[in-house]
Length: 565
Image (tube, rainbow, N blue to C red; front, side):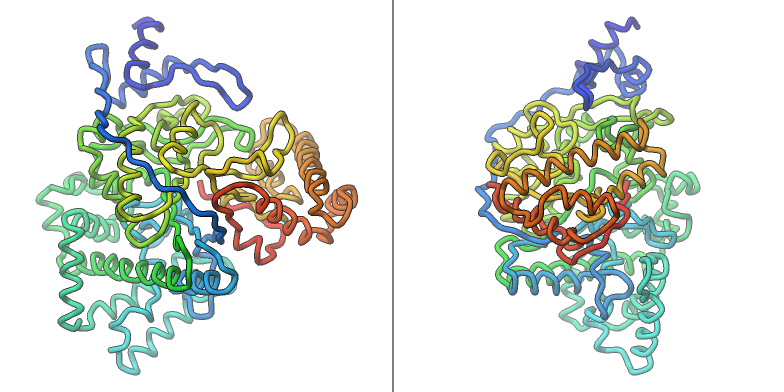
């Protein structure tokens, strides 16, 4: 097929044949990329394009009242009672304290999606096994009602497991889950009251076949590993008779029961938030996708595109691009399924929260597809029916009375930010990226329909960013495309411009030159002043929501940024 014919075929099926990169250059997509993507879509020159979604009435979310809140990676919010990492009781306590004392309106947390059911447990909450179900790593064992029925010896055994899991050092998810799973297995064997049993049965009926399939995947993953593509061939189809024969009822019930416990503790966290006066409460985070061999792709295999991963093209912060190792939804098959798995996922994420953040908001519109074996720079954009995706997103959020925030950072297609705003979906305004003609944007010029923050979970705390920790890390990982000295010079210039604007706004007590000199010397003398000034700056913007990193609020020292992808 000639290249011009290939381009026309790709465009008919929502596959971009060229794109504008982060430097504003027009870049053609390689023919090999187009062929690989079209093949994954099941397209040849005789395949008609997928018909557009017919939308009768576009729903819209109501205006969000101005509020501020904390943003936290829940696993890092450790207390004396948690088992080595932050859990749902810690979340409830944080919400009750920040809502009742400082007057926060919300707490934004990382995705709580399901991880592997057995070690090794992946460290990234943004590469889950399922976005439909949650991770029992976040359960507080002592809050399970059956714990009260344990005898003294059994309680002592649980306390010993908790002590084994606790550590003041790095989070050891394998050790934590090994200990929690043993304790929870003990509690699962405790007879439930009649009322509790009825509640559990109602939960199982509500969740239906999706929960049954997920529990089966968990059982098989414990035995064969968390990548179903490496399982025996007869177990790769969830409808196979071999699967039913290989999954003991008692073990499957254990994993379904864990989801019931999570449902209850998630609800308790939201009740704690609203009970403390928060108008929004818990804002959950929705990852872009799931791991290739995880539960969602096993259950809905036909809805995912083969031979592709989702990522992002090169940009200023990730100059070699990103490959997140997650298969994309197949747009045509998802539409043919009436978006049912997508809708169920949204409903689950919104059930026990007052808001939802979309990591990489472009997931409702277009995604950067990378053929297997190709570099992130050799991908292309594939479009989804964004009207349909947004319809269901707004519909589910409206039913839940929730706010929605889209992380519309990086390369965003023309018109998407306006479309999100028209539907009442807030965008994200990240201070370090809010510039115009290379200069920091003054506070009155910021968007109103947004969540404004200084940084994100992808970046170091403010003090780490100020000291350039991210440049050293990216250099060590080989992610820079130009000499480190140039990166450091650009960073110093941009940071100096922000200090100048903070000074013009009357938010710095000391001269910018003194702050820069201290940073050059590796001194932290002005770190606290800079952190306070940046947040005072956010308060001067018209943004509807202001997010404050719990790490910044707690005075985190310069540190390496989180690397979740």
